Image (cartoon, rainbow, N blue to C red; front, side, top):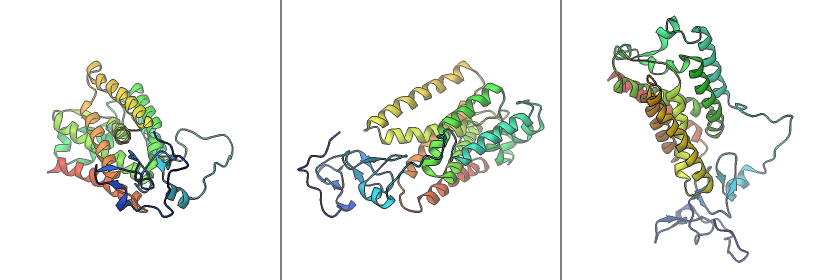
Length: 293
C-alpha cells in the first residue's frame, strides 16, 4: 500500500472518471492521484481510489466525495450491541420459516404431506411443477441438515442482506435456489428427490467468493478468499463422504451467486437496489424457463 506525503498535489477540483485511467498502461489509477495505480474502488460510486483516499465503510470502502455526501457517521449507543441477524429481516424470516416447516413435517419425516407437496421431485418438475425448484428451501431431512444450513445462513446472510438490501437479498436467495434446482433436475435422475436450502446457501458462498476475487489485490480480499476457498473445499468433500448429498444444487447455487455478484458489481447509482432486485429475480425466472422449455 502507498501512503500520502505532504508534497503530493491534491487537485482543488476532483478529477473526473473520464481521466481516472492511465491510458498508457490501461491500469486503473486513483481519480485524485493519477500517478498512483490502484486496485481499490469506492463501493458506492465505483471510482478507483488509492489507500490514502480510501475510508473503510460497513461494506467496502468510500471515496472522499461519497464520504462528504453521506455526511458524518456516528455510532449512537442504545444499549447492548445487537449481532447476528439484527437488521436482516429476510434472513430472519428464511430461518424461521425453515425451522417452522421442520417442525410441521415431523422433524423431516419423508412421509409428511408437506414433503410430498414441496420437495423437488424431478419427474414432477418435468411435468410442469416448476415451483418445486424453490420450495425445497423450506424442507430439511434431519436435525443435522437443518442445523448446518441455518448456521450457514445465520453467518453469511445478514452481512450480505445489510450490504445489498433486503429485496436484492431475497432475489439472490431464490435465484440461487432455483439454479441449484435446475442443476439437480438436469444432472440427476428423473426419480431423484431433493430437499434443503443448500443451493440457496451456496448462492451466498458464491457472492462472497465474487467479492473476494474482485478484491484479491487487498489484504482483506486475500484473507477472505482463503477462508471461502477452505470452506468450499470442505463442502466439496461432503458429497464424497456422505452419499445422497445433492452436490448438483451446491454447484448450481455457487455459480448463480458468483454470476449475480459479478453483474451487480457493474451497476451504481441511487436505483442500484432496484436494479439488483430485478437482476436476481430475472435469474430466478430463467431458472423456471430452463425446466419448462
